[in-house]
Length: 75
Image (cartoon, rainbow, N blue to C red; front, top):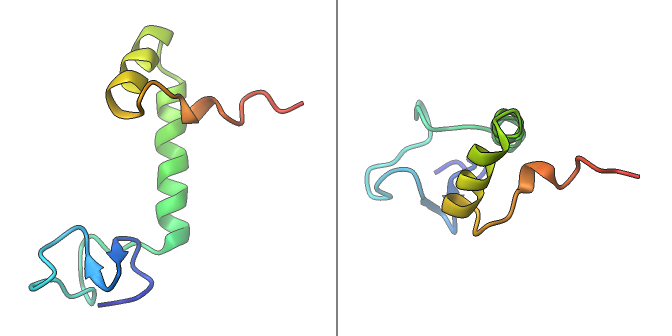
């Protein structure tokens, strides 16, 4: 198990069965930087959606919060 894999939690793979997972050659492996960049891109895509769709996504997946708007109003 690669300790730098973004899905590594307490030495266990959260993406695959920990008994079968090997990070070498794993299709799910991402560095922390890549995982953060992918998440930021996903939030940008959500922010570009119409307000009604953003509200739906916030209610369904983010307990009503909109993390894609957190940095929108800086100063």
